[in-house]
Length: 211
Image (cartoon, rainbow, N blue to C red; front, side, top):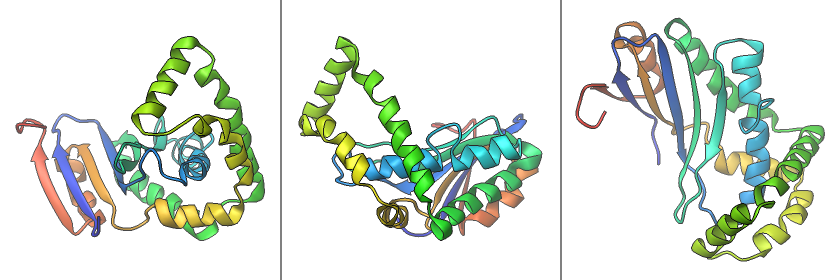
């Protein structure tokens, strides 16, 4: 999807602004899925991620900021999501975009890469340790046309990841342009600043059908 767009949902009684933006991500069976998970862990997938560190830990603009890929049969969305008080909406959005820019310009270090590898390796085993969890995983593999190699080869795929691969993945899957925004907040306080993020701006009310 090309061209930045923003959907603004006016909630007149809102004291905080909730925002989510991104673009099309990857499918469940994308061959780069392990590499994408590693980069996203660093960018917005854990408490010490780049997004949460800047928006929560360092600045206190929000209680949480994260990013995720919703992987389906067809490529699902990649999205960044957070919230902040009305007065700091523009600052939080600007900072989020700065984090994306920094990811593209500076990439990740070898130490950061190793940290993400260790994190994913440590988090994965509990997801299949019970019979119920294993059954759900098998059903997921069957549904998406995958096989046991998705699990058995996971660690080798993680180990083979390099900083160069990470930069390719950043450039390919983590959009810095052509972003699609959804912003829910108090129009009388934040609409004017929200308009700067996309040339295509659509406004709806929280009371409109479907919203």
